[in-house]
Image (cartoon, rainbow, N blue to C red; front, side):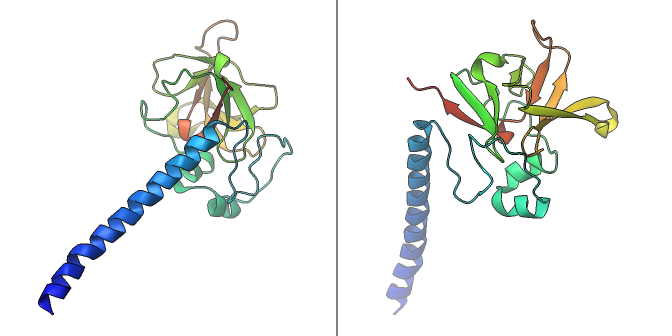
Amino acid sequence: MKKTNLLLAFLIPLVVLNACAQTKKNDIKKEQSMENKDVISKPNNPYYSNTDTTKLNIADAEWKKVLSEDVYAVAREADTERPFTGKYWNADDKGTYYCAACGNKLFRSDQKFSSSCGWPSFFEQENKNSVVYKSDSSLGMERTEALCGRCGGHLGHLFDDGPAPTYKRYCMNSIAMDFIPDAK
């Protein structure tokens, strides 16, 4: 009886660990297969679309149901990821950046530049409706908050220290964006 209990005590964690590892492998395969598509599908988020530009007016309680905790914290609560930690801060792949909450097209990779601030930076938005602005006086500073033009989610801030021709720096949170690479 003791040998059976000992064997079970060893096997159960092993089976659970293997099952978790398998789930991670499957998740990675799904992400890799999504990289080759020209749209992103988020079945648990009915508001997500890479093509629909209809303005959204969704309550935060509803967003909390469909967004991951980290995306919700940035997009709906204006949190900020730590510098030099986001997946896009130093990326130079060619493609298009979209709002991680609603799928709205925000920026093209040719609008991105290396600013060394620790967050992905762009000198221009994709179109005049991609990003909207709001005055932000939090943290004892006067800044311009950059919000998704479709869902109003927090993306980051806009500064006047970017390169020509716009001299703007859209300092964005990686977690607030999705990316679709150009077809090769």
